[in-house]
Structures are given as structure tokens and as C-alpha cells.
Amino acid sequence: MVRVDDYTHHTGRHCGSTSLRNLSSHYGWGYDEETCFGLAAGLGFTYFDLPESPHRAFFGRPPRLEPAFFDRLAIDVDRYEGDDWETTLERIRTAVAADDPVLVFTDIYYLEYFETDTHFAPHALLCVGVDEERGTALLSDSEFDERREVPLERLRAAMTSDHVLPLRNRHIVVSDPEPNRTLAEAAPEAVAEMARSMLEPSERDRGAAFGTQGIEGIRRLADDLPSWVDLENPQWTARFAYQNVERRGTGGGAFRRLYADFLERVIDSTAALPDDAPSRMHAVAADWTAVGETLEAASERDDPDAMEPALVDASESIREIADREKQLYEALRVGVG
Image (cartoon, rainbow, N blue to C red; front, side, top):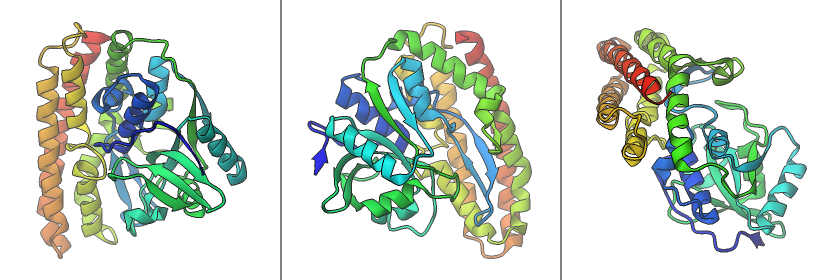
């Protein structure tokens, strides 16, 4: 087996930001998970339709979180997507042999250690070892205390899944680990970028035919929620929505709690931030948690008619959250933009 020497595995709150934190530890950048998340402008919102159950879904983070972190700190990386598996595997093996963990994007359905029958992608993790004789890869996954060894064929399936968001062997390798920007330089720009993307998503934010982004996406969710009773399995749709608020690596409150903690980290060193920004974001996170509890309760009601009042309540709460988030992001954009 070839493996990354002197690599320390840590669990964390979110797959992407934990993987970035583990890279930070490996290369000596010195950033904790919350700071990695914030520097990646990691807060976002995407509401989208799925062709299969649960048919509706949302993410509280942006699609480009991981690449944005490297861009913000001007760390040189090589990004790959669309290559065949043989080319991808050889690149991963070469990088690992050179002591460079490889950031890969997967569907957890195919990773046996999750023991799940639900497709969920993209899930970011680090590949830190390859044993071609045994046909296995060694993975550093944010949700597990120990590194996990999986068959290469399962990793291949996880990296080429067409479910939720299609993956085509997407992976990132650090080519020069020296950051060219400091935290003091990067943090204000990251906050401004997050606020801009939530208020006025660009075509780059939106992605090709990928849902509704930003505040507009939150409002679309609020408008659409009551109609979930007409879906094939509304209980599962509501349950999946609850999980995307409080579980599935969000850090709680649809990623808002993780971002509030980032704001606390940088409030003293980023003079332009409003003093009350962390407390306002914590309050928004708490409101999302309450919405999650309502969605969980709705998912436990067998009759769609009995579900509808809870979905209406959640819809009204989310509409109010959208207004509060808009006000907060406007204040952040003015403060640091």
C-alpha cells in the first residue's frame, strides 16, 4: 500500500470543511474547521427538484465550497473531473505516494461503512492510501473516528454516481501547499462573497440547471412546502428535509450555526464586521433548528392531511427566516464589501 505519511485523521461537523481542516493540519496552515468553512464562503442555500424520491431537497451550503477555500487563500491546486477511472486512480495513487491527500467527492450510498440505502452526494472526504494488490483505498471521512478501508470498486461507484448531483470522478490535489494570502486578507472577502451569493446569485453560483440559489431559494422552499403532501412519499420528503437542517453534516441549523462560529472566530480581527453579526447568525440557526423539528414532526404523521398544518407552519417560519437572513447579509455586505 502507498499511503500519506504523518497524516492525522479528525472527525468534524461537515464533510467538506472537515476535509479542509485535515488538509490544513497536514500542510501546516493552522485553520480549524469553522475557519475553513468561513473562508470557503461556506454558507449558502440551494433548493432543487429530484427525479426520484424524496423529489425535493435543499442544501444550506454552496456547490463550490471546497474550491472556493483554495481560491480565497490562493493555494495552488489541480482540479479534475470527467476523466475515466483508470486515469483517476493512477492520479490518486501518485498523489498519495507523494504524501498529498486527495480530496474526492462521493455518493455515500456506495460506501459500505455508511450502511445506508439513501443516495447522498456530493460527500467530500480524503483518500490517504491505495493498495492495488488488495484492491482497496484508505479514506479519511469526517463522520467516523477511524480511517476506513474500502474496495476500489466501491470508491469508483461512489465517485461516478448519477444520483442527487452527478459525479464524474471529481477530485482535487494540492499542487503547492503554500498559501499566498493571509487570514486577515481573506476573511473580509469571504464574508462579502457569501453575502453577495446569497443576495444576488450569479450564473456561476447557480450552476447549470441546478436549482434555485440564495434567498430566492429559501423563499421558493417556503412557497413549495405545503404542496409536498401531493408528492409520492411526503413523509420521506419531510424527513429528508429535517435531516438536511440538523443532520447529514450540517453542524446544526442548516449550516448557520457553523457559520456563526466562524464569525465569532474572526470578529475581533475583521473590524468591518457588525458587532452583532455572530449573535444574529446564531439566532437564525436556532430558527432553522426549530423548523427542522417541525419537519421531523411532520414526517411522523402517516396521513398527508395531518401533515399539512405542520408544513404550513414550517413554510411561514421559513418565510420569516428569509427576511431576517436578507437583512443580515445586506448588513454584512455593506460592512465588509
